[in-house]
Length: 582
Image (cartoon, rainbow, N blue to C red):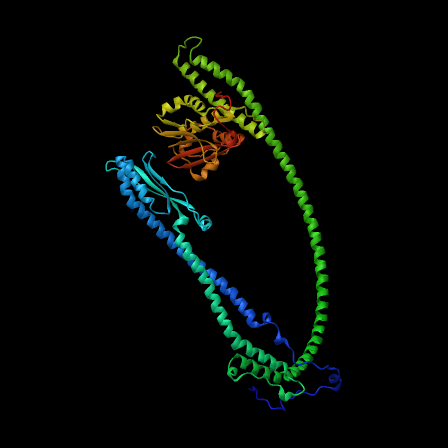
């Protein structure tokens, strides 16, 4: 069949110049590419690709089906085991209630009738075995599959129902299941399903491509033969032929397109000549524009260089200003550090100078208050001596706190570490605060575990921390209130010391303030309580000296919780070192 509507005159190509015709060598227009081996045929390549795709799809779909069946089989099997155990549990309960070993043995013997049960036993409430039966696993070629996708041996158990007068189970019924034996039938079905899923797609693919070879590959080969027989010297023969049965399908369209291609080739040649002429004109125009743009870029480069020089000068000036400012800041830093050292030294010297007369005042006032040298006739003298003694002790405490803070700021505070027992230290601190606790009728609840480990720390500083925590708690807790103290080793291995009260509390925005030296919350409650605001700040510094940290949580009207965390490396096991409670 001939496709195309050109006349022989229209199909003649344009005459070529003699010079061109003379250099064109004759070309063999009958290639033998279509006689290549079978492995190079399109049908073979498509068949090979189809086989691979069919194999992958078959394996994938079969695997999905096997997985679905496995899930259903597992659910059904577990339900069956539950039914078996439920039925057997009634007799097992009776055997446990009566402690009848023969009846329990009948239960396990009945369970062993199932070939997939390899162990069955009945236990009482004290885990004593009333009856047990065991059988060995059978040899199986699929056991490795069972071990790779699930447990090889799986245990199922059911708690027996308790007596009517008790809520505790009297025992349990336990079976061990050989999952490979239980799923033997499933493996056989799965093997058949996978094989069918692979073989059936392959058969369908082979049949499909046999038909494809007859209906498509052979006509394509004949069409290629027609292409190879086109003779440019005889334009009237420039026609592609296909079988009449393919006149309206894709092969017919290909033949028609080939014939039309011959017609439009000459037209495209003429268009290309015109396009080449326009391209030459456009190239000349582009060269002119490039030259103009080059001149403009050169001018912009000159302007940018000028701007870069100005920017470099500006950077140099800025660097000089930064250097001068840095020198000023360094001088200011040195001045501030000198002032801080001077302050710390002054406070340390003044604290030492004040301690000596204060100790004398405390001692003499105690002698007068307790009338050690004889009775004082005037009662007011004894009251004044008591006030002097109490005020001197308070002033000595303030001076000691100031001295400690000065040492910490100067980096001169050294810890005298030893292994201490917290219960003894807490008891000593509690005795010191007995009067203030009794005066306000407070309850002090101490919760320290018996197995609390010891702590390697400075005993004096730990006492100082505990006393400050408890003093603040008792000071800001109303009469008849409660103060809690507890110690523990938390989940992160840190040693935790915590004091909690039911006092007035602190607003969230004031917590940072009270942790600063001399920091106090200015309200009606603090103005009615004595204090310098050094306690919590000093405790925070002492805890940090031990490598720990302090947290403070508070809610106004509810209470305050202050917690000290000491690192795990400071915890000492019982009996590791000598205990100190100085």
